Image (tube, rainbow, N blue to C red; front, side):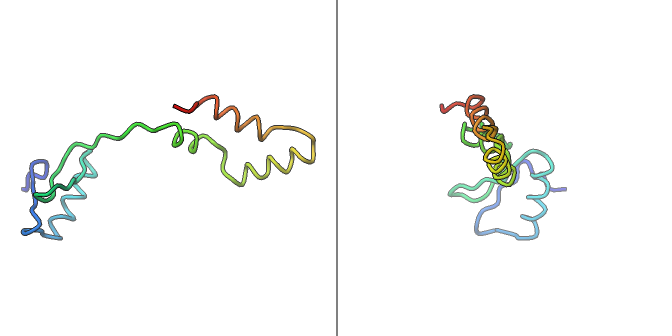
Length: 95
């Protein structure tokens, strides 16, 4: 069996079939295939922390919901949309 955790594949000996199996193994075991000048190698995946923009983007209501909020704010004389947006901005301030 191939030791995918310690496999290095140079560009000269690139094997598409092996690469596909390797990528599947990496994804299933918390690794990623990285690349440098020598070729491809496996490394432990370390997710990057999200910045405030990404956190805000995930926290905002979807655009359809926001448009509905804006419409009903106009109809009812309320300010729910602005309050929802402001709550997200307070939760995730600019860094």
